[in-house]
Length: 386
Image (cartoon, rainbow, N blue to C red; front, side, top):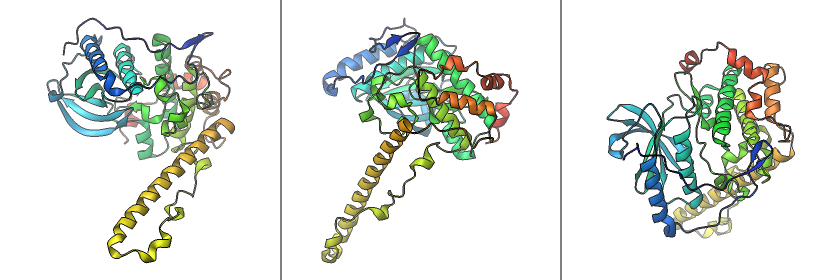
C-alpha cells in the first residue's frame, strides 16, 4: 500500500449548522436505511481509494500489511469492532489495531471513513496518533498509538479512586484535546468517557474514538447503551447540541474517576434484576416433566432469565436517562472532601442549561485548570505505582 499519494477528499458528511460562534448539531439526524449488499462494492472502492491516498503527515510512516502484525493480546471492544495489541515486526513498533467489519451498517461505514480522515489530519499531543490503515477483507484494520497503561476506566477499576491532583491533569489534557479538535477541525467528540481517555507510562493523557458520526449515536431510539449515560441532557432529549455537550461528559467522567464509581450508581441500583424474581412460565408443568425433559426445561428457564435481565437492564437504563434529564446534576462530593476549585469546575461542567455552560476553550482559563497546568505533579512517577 502506497501511503505517499496526495490526500483524498472524502464525500462530505452532512454539515452541521452554525449558530452564533458555535457549531450546532441538528436534532434527529438519522440517515435513510440502505441495503448493505447493494452498496458494498461502491463502499469498498471508496474505502480502498481512501486508504491508498492518505498522506500521513507524521514523523513515522509504516508500510502496513496484516502478515507483518503479530497479535499480542486483546485490548477490548471499540466502536464497531475489536481492538488488539500488535507488534509491527519490520520496525518492532507496538501498536493498537482496531478491526472493523466492512459490511457494517451504513452509519458505521460512514463512521469508518470519517474516523480515518480525522485521525489522518490530527496532530496533537492530546490525541492518539494514527499510523495507517489497510483492508483485510472483510475487515478494515486501523493502526494507532498503543498506550501501555490503558484507559482511565481500567485504571480506576484496578487501583480505586484517582487522586484529585491527577484528575486535574486529566481535565487539562481532555480540554486541550477537545479545544484542538474543535478549533482546528470543527469536530465535536461526542463520546467522552473514562474508557476513551488513555494513559501511558510516559505520563501522557490522550483521547481516542473521536470519529463517531452524529448519525451513529444521535438517535435516542438506538442509544440505550452504556455510552449514552455520559450524554448531556440536551442530547438525551434529542435537541440541538454543540461542543458544550462534551463538557458535560467530561464533568461526569471526572466525578467517576475521583469517586471510583459511576456518579449515578446510587440512584439507579435496583434489586429487581435478581434472577430469583424472574417468573417461571413452566412452574405449572414441573410435575409433568420427565427426566429427559429437565435439560430442555433448564435451558428454557435460563433463556427466560436472560431475557428478563436484559429487559430490566433496559428499564433501568431508561430510568437513568430520565433521571439525568429531570433531576439535579451530580456533584463532586461529599462537600469539603475535594478542593473548592475542583468542585466549582465540575459544577460548571454540569450546568443543565447548555446556554450557560462554558466551552472547553473557556474552561481552560478556570483557576483549577491553571493550577493543574502549573502543578509539578509527576505523572510518570504516578504511572509507575500500578
